[in-house]
Length: 239
Image 1 (tube, rainbow, N blue to C red):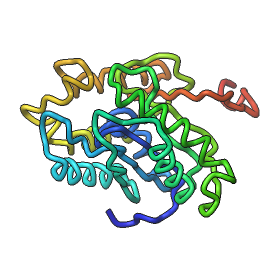
Image 2: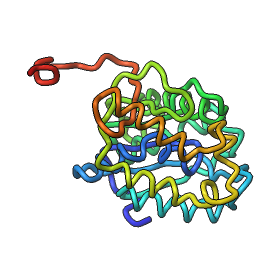
Image 3: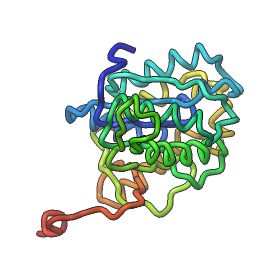
Image 4: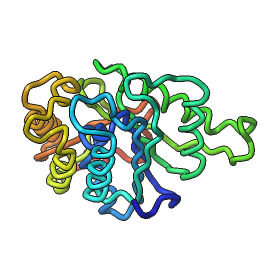
């Protein structure tokens, strides 16, 4: 994609080239439409998937990123099915954070049935911290994003807030469907990833449920580990 090398406001990390779309696609589309620059980083090429080659999946990923309005999408080419939280992998992610300097980072929630999602969450969390250490690879200036927003793939629990994404949900659906090798006729990967027989319906039902909790058509939920500062609760709950 064009724009690689451009600094961004938000970077969304996923283990595979469709995780970000499933968990936070509408949020990213909304932020892009609001004028914020969004980047997407896939850790693996999804080469262990039952359907689609790495080259096919790369093309699908680029199309999905364009639909969401991302300015670039990168792939760190870590081994699918064997993501590890060790120095080399941590520093790959830390260098991305230092180079593109986002304010917000997205990562999958750490309690998940897929080991790659669990490892990705752990890896991004550690890299987020390490990226801010000045004496660690000092040739690239230290930088730590303000917050990690953890998005949900399989489980829905312990979320900190829900974003109204109703106006951007069609873009999410189009971006998910752009991964045709996975979600088209005969795609088996969603069965393994989500544990359900109708993955697109599952995703929409989950997001409708999240939206219903805040009185909107669709929502996407996120978890943060740090406290959320609120200057004036009346601006949120006042009549």
